[in-house]
Amino acid sequence: MKRWWYIARRLQPEGQAGVMGDGERTGGSPGRIVAEATIATALAIMIVSLCVTTGFKHEIERKLYGLVPHIEVSNALMPSVGDSALVDIHAVTGAISSDEYLAHHVRSVSGELVKPIMLKTDDNFEALRLRAVDGNFDWQSIEGYLVEGTIPLRTDTMSIVVSRHIANRLTLHAGERVMAYFVGENIKARRLTIAGVYETQLDAFDDVTALAGRALVEPIMRVDSSACHSIAITVDDPAMSEPIAYSLYSALMSAPGNSVQYSLVPVTLKHRQFFAWLDMLDMNVTVIIILMLIVSCFAVISTLLMIVLRRTSTIGLLKALGAPDRGVRAVFIFLTLKSLARALLIGNVLGLTLALVQHHFHIIHLDPASYYMNSVPIEISPIAIVLLNAGFIVVSLLSLLIPSMAVTRVSPATSMRVE
Image (cartoon, rainbow, N blue to C red; front, side, top):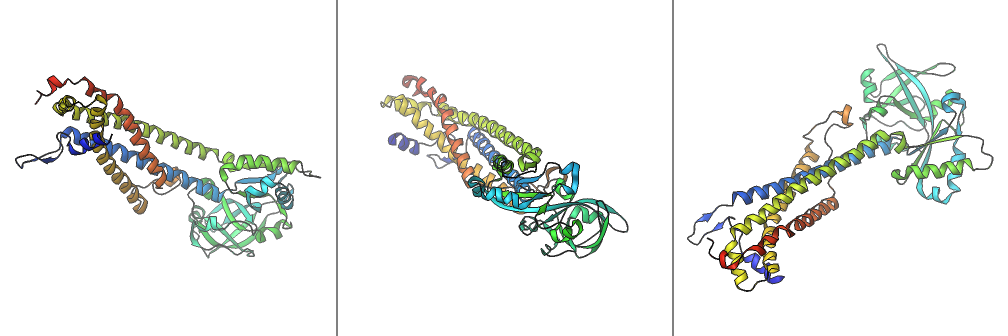
């Protein structure tokens, strides 16, 4: 195999840019240039598609897994009974600690009181769902989306955090005060301070959710620190939230003295529309990659056939010198791979350059109302890029096996007379 590689290295594909014997420089074959450009463009499209899809998936998952409980535990009677249908956080933590599987996979447990409130200014009002969280709540998941203000202290009884959408409709800013009405058997009013304003661009969260510490709601509801409307379970792998939820449900229902009917909702079920959309993106990028591979295979095959047609006399000479058909095929496959290598280099540089430009400068913008983000997200995975290139090379080599058999049909007696 080494000698065929050596011959291929010494040969120059017909029509490739080079220097003729009289010193005149030849230009690249238009057909070869078009084929290489097609391969490079197809590879660049695959790289950009992969980076965009990966960026979309990870950005949506990062928002969902950071803002929504991985598993939400509540009393199954909560919708009909209301505030009297509370759950004890100690019962949940006890069930988790007594089960080795759950203790290994559960990262944190946070209790929440959920209260409907109405924020009112002189000109407008908004009805919201207030999540009053305890000290175990991961405020860092919200802090990354803050556009104004700060996160309130755990003991703060007069501050809340609202979304930019709500703040804009009420014409409020961080540090300003607003009247809040807590809806229940008796409506209670408090003048609260807007501690911070966040923007996640997830309408399902931004349009209805305000956040505060439990210290704000506990005196109003007159409950102790163990009573919760819902309990947010954070696990080490959110994709495994469903089997973990089933295990936790079994542990809770089999606990001695249990009299509560629990409802457990994993994030993958509560927001299944987002995950269905992400699965559709995977299908789209798979279709794009398959189409680009087909186009590239045709380009690679055409490159090989052009080299064979233009090097017919060389084939005859090699056969006349005793070279086997397999060796001659290897020479022309190596010649084709030289063009493929140039196309791969150009395609990788082009695709990665486009991805990096979008990643750093956000040139292509999106409508947040439809895509939940301001610009096309990009995530470059070196492993994925390497695997894509490896798969591209393997498919290209396989596509050359049958077309390269055209070499065996060339007769040495007639080919050496071909100019």
